[in-house]
Image (cartoon, rainbow, N blue to C red; front, top):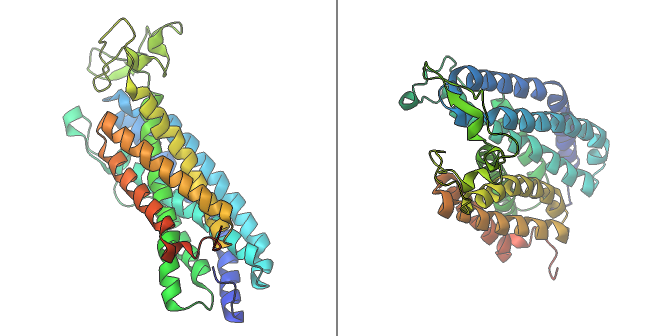
Length: 334
């Protein structure tokens, strides 16, 4: 980002930091928690009795939403603390604010998808009853409010319109890809931690806890080994002898690696805003790794979400390497 700012620019950014900080501390956590509770209610009562595949959404959403909510409060508090430095025109404070607003912007994106998949979506082929909730999630403002603040911090300087348009592309793509790979990570972790043997179908055709689940000494009880014996689509037993399944590795990398890469992309934003070379190298590393892992996941599991994620990561990598954009992210020669 260009460091030259006017008093008006600094005043606007200071107001944004204060208002955004208060929003993240006082309103966003409640909006996120309301969204989480409604989603879990729908999963537990409407979906799981008809399809055990939905069960992993309970621990995954409970954990990830909780982490985001905690991050909101910490980010909001830091924005309030940084407000004075932002008004004074301190470059690192402005860059930090940009990164702090990136957190809820990405989080808001990831909170929208579970609502559409778990709350609003219909699954008549599985016998799932119609949804009982309509409308947009309570967390929707988290995405749009913080995106507005993010771009306000990014563009509030004396740079030319051409340069602002150019730097808008990489700093927008970083957030989009961070959100996309995080959401694909949810998909990977969902199937990685799923133990089909823990569930059974009762006399009424509903999914219930298996009264005789696989003992902990059985490979069917472990998320690393169970797919070596089961069909990865139907979860039916295919072999008593272990048959190496590439699914496990694809889910591990397409889950937890994508989580980590999403966080790294967010971390890279304030660093590149200061043209710190570490930020550019972190972002390019994450983009390359997520592209490879996502394409691998598509090949192994035929998941179009991972194909889309891989393509977005590849585009981000190209953007980071193109000199017209790179000049705003890292000092020449670094």
